[in-house]
Length: 135
Image 1 (tube, helix red, strand yellow):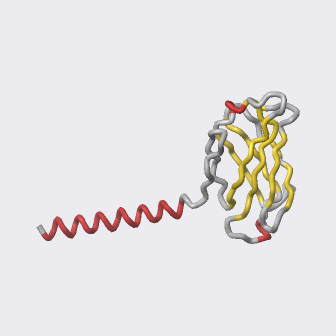
Image 2 (tube, rainbow, N blue to C red):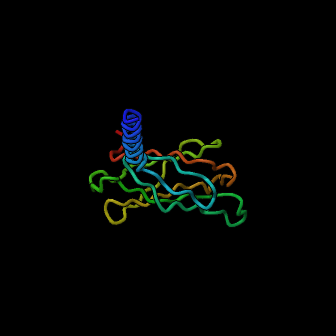
Image 3 (tube, rainbow, N blue to C red):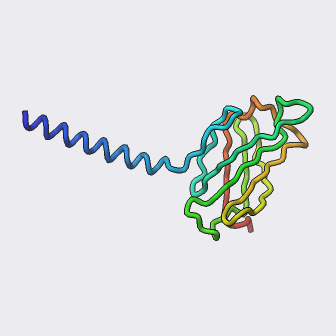
């Protein structure tokens, strides 16, 4: 009986350690947006305040996606200098416009006004960011 109790305690401790390790690994998350997608995790950056600009003439289409991106470590030197976005559902990679905010926060705008995308096509966003510019 004592042996089963010790074994149960050992299993419980292993499960608690595994759960806490998973919690740290999943720390870079974003909240789902009102359009109904779940943003992908960008290692090293927190993506927040995601906004879909609906096309005025047809609110079922999106002519821009805006968000803020901040390095997880808060280091100004790691502020994003290039951000590319791809919406999963048929989108190609788009280089976005960056506007520095209060360092190291950067406001990002991805303009789709030339060819608005259907809101239903935006299932997931893939976001790639770098603190260095392409050579």
